[in-house]
Length: 338
Image (cartoon, rainbow, N blue to C red; front, side, top):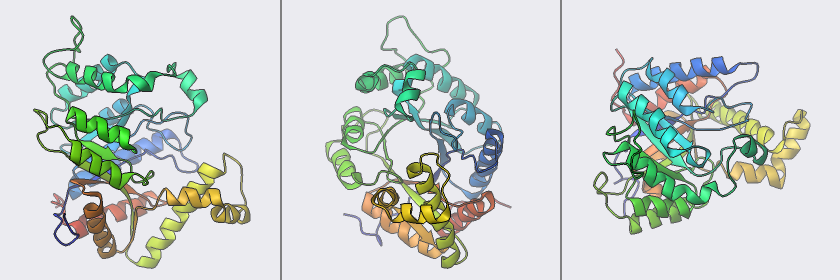
């Protein structure tokens, strides 16, 4: 088994939630996403993924395909994808047409991660017209979708145009054994959401690797593990930024939209509910570029990861871009900056 010292320097990628900061509009988040992608491309990051969320005031990535199209038009080479599309919310044919269109316009640059969670609350599920049992058909929907991207559709007489023959790479997303088992059975890469759901990481990766069934496109298993990162010039500054982000997360998840004083938020942070939320973020590299790099090497070995998906956790655009640059430098990414 790999140790931190022997584990190879794996590629780094980013997940962008298109966060809407206080006082901003979604347009501001989209402009930041373009800036992020342009900088990440120059710094040598492998890919950026955008996740489907609905009815969340602080996240603007409700339509990943549209956002990917916008960012792709303003970048040249970095891979862009969904991390992911919540497939039970959609007909597989529609997703095949959307991402087939993207693949035709930006060949070789488009990824498609697939999840079965709703990405929202129960009331919004009804507004999406999602059937209660839709998630149960997720494995069949993945197979159907893969067929549309290949040369032979699984539905006789129905083809995705665009989509057919584009072979858009598919990734199964998950935070439990279900996704690991499905990815292994289908011979697809697997991405674990350890940046917010860390509990089953080790077991899920072990099950995936031990039960993997090689496929034509993917003869070997491939694991992407997500991790939070806050890098700064000093450890104190990184801890300051991370603390602000932790308070923001607890306020959003446990405050339930209420206006909280600092004293009330302090109490909430120390409560069982607050501590549970913070434990969801346990995989978090915080510190100088050297400290963050060391943490990520340990984490990559721990997760048996072939690639790391980084969720940058900083309270401002400038700080997140600086964190991105520090990490790229420490990881010795193949920068194209002049």
